[in-house]
Image (cartoon, rainbow, N blue to C red):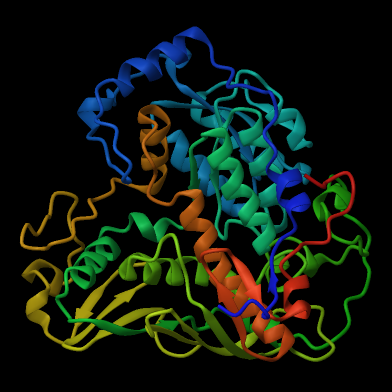
Amino acid sequence: MSAEVPLISVSNTFAESLSMSSDATPNRSPNRRQFLAATASAAAITAAPMFIPRTSLGYGRTAPSDRIAIGAIGCGGKGRHNTSAFLADDRVQVIAACDVDANHLNQGADLIDAHYKNSDCARVEDLRELIARSDIDAVHVSTPDHWHSFASVRAMQAGKDVYCEKPLANSFGESKAIRDTAIRTGRILQCGSHERSNNNCRFAAELVRSGRIGKVHTVRIQMPCEQDHHMSARAFRKKAEPQEIPEGLNWDMWQGHTHPVAYWEKGCHFWWRFILNYGGGEMTDRGAHIIDIAQLGLNRDSSGPVSFEAKGIQVAESPYDAFWDYEFTNTYADGTKLIGTTEGPRGLKFEGEDGWIFVAIHGGALSASDPEVLPQSVRDGKPVAFDQIDDSLKVQLGRSAGHHKNFIDCIISRAEPMATAEIGHRTATICHLNNIAMKVGRPVRWDPGTEELIGDFEAGELLLPNMRDPWQV
């Protein structure tokens, strides 16, 4: 790399301020601490993501005092989905819920109380209050994307393990800070890119990495915007008109570190993902799943492409400034390409010198140019079973009993989860750099080793979020 070419990266001041570890240490009651230590001793701890069999972790009836205490940060649709998944695990006790919308908060807390048949769930508006509780071991962060960094960083600094929804954060700088904080504090962080725990996806990655289709030269990423709500957002072509803030919604806090704007119903719940201050559009919403499996299949979990070419459409005079109908080509240092479009069925196709394998996302159906590379059961439409292992494959990635269960397994064992902070950060980085390339209207070059843009100061400024007080981390 030429010394004359400037590198643009996140400033040390920003990264350190965002990921600085506090003096807080995990606060666990003796019962929980003894329970975790005892069950961890039964597991073989390795550096690789691992699944621990139910029998070795003591699944079954667990005394409430010995359960892992979880707080739910975010009680919208995804938040309640994640809460339900943890409620189904008897090793867990969900004891608190947090949301800036009182309606969502009550829905989330009512779900918890109904499960335990009591009214014990704490209900708080400010996540800082929940994070400060010494009786909480872990949190799930199921907020809009622009809140992921504050919630995750502060929770880990307070000694809590974190299940953070995908994408890991709404900017490169924020996701890097989450990754750095996880490393610095030693906390378990599971990114919510749950396709990592889809055993069809894991098996497809094993086939690819074991050479069953020869050397891979291209991965085709297909992210169609086919749902009605996505089409509605893309067709919206009028200015947002300010509306009265609904009772029970703390709109100022909902906006977090972003520049405050007037409330508009379709600029808030769900629709926020099409506004770049809060989310990254389809690129990060679906890309966090599909590109993630490309990284897994290519064995690039700690790296990424070196060049990003992308173009897309921003709808004129629309408050939804996310990109639509995009195309992108990302190239790794060895010439392997990710080629993405919004056409075709949702999923990804690995193309090698000897054939291809296609993986459908949100379902995981597999197909191949040579069906013989797939087991008969998979060809018959059955999912890869938990105990279905092909010993002839050189690469074995293991199976998962579920993304949420894997997180709890790893809280107990202290092994790495299926989707670590590093994995989530690297996938999010690809998504963010594609959005940046579309925003500046030209290709950008990237050094995945130093995590720096090469020779583009305008693009480099987009790596950093503009955070307002008091939500700077």
